[in-house]
Image (cartoon, rainbow, N blue to C red; front, side, top):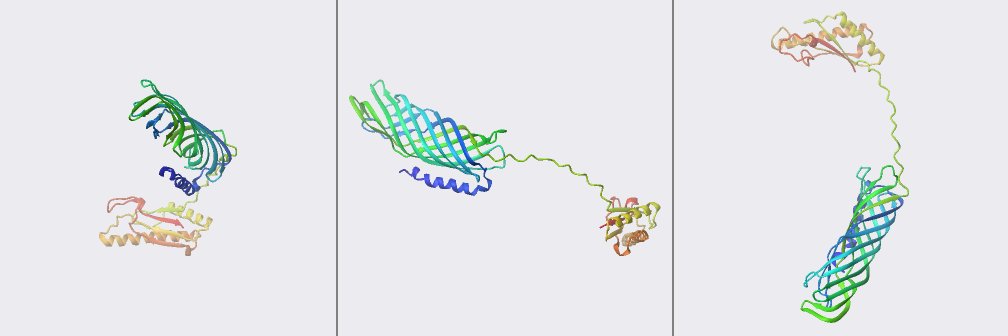
Length: 377
């Protein structure tokens, strides 16, 4: 057995190991399914060993046709198994040897039965599902072709059927057909080979060797080729008898628009260098007190601020603004208490000219920065 063929078992094991890692992302094909495919097939050159009657050379085949049918079972976790019958038909294009390129006719047919193990993957897209797998089985190779060199009067006919163990690798894509549950379009690449050498009966008129041609003799025997490597590209249809149910339709439930949230921050504004409350300021404070009572607030922050026009230079001006902001905060606190807010729930702080609402140049009178913020926390 060749080294290439000895790798079949480990290769199959590797494919199944990769599949076991990907179970969490499997397409859940469940239960019985059937599959049919057809497409093009290509044989790599088949090397002829040679004999006294059949010189060493290469059989070169044209692109042919392939078809298969299979019946399988999906386990719902990405893995599936199937049994397959396949057929490949290729014409012999020409025969290359030291005697030039003889005229050829006829071809080769290969048919077999395989058992496959496959794994379907889920990429998170509902329109495409890649899959891969491997298969083992038995294949028969039937040859029926002629090789002739008319100028010499040489003719060789090869016929008969050879069977042996075969295996294959499968890589494909499945595309579920919209509005047809269980039906998928498939496209595949398959590599298939069988153990060799493949031997067929041959009969030649004349003996053709590297030393020359000896006419008049009739030679018969086995004509052996050392390799059979086949590549196929196919399109097909797969039908699952127990497809997963379609996802439930999404029903949008109307969302009630939330009511307006009560104000959480109230601003009270002051004249320049003043801590007195205007009528407008008292109305804002009364609204804050009522809202605090309605929502059951247990903590109210009262923060006082000034603009940066202290009327005093340097640190003295900063200290003056700090005290002015505190006086404003305390004036608001007193009004909140008169409006029914418990004194123990009110916290007052002064920030001076820090954190202005409106950024200004130094020593600028800005009405919006002369304020107290009532925060319901």
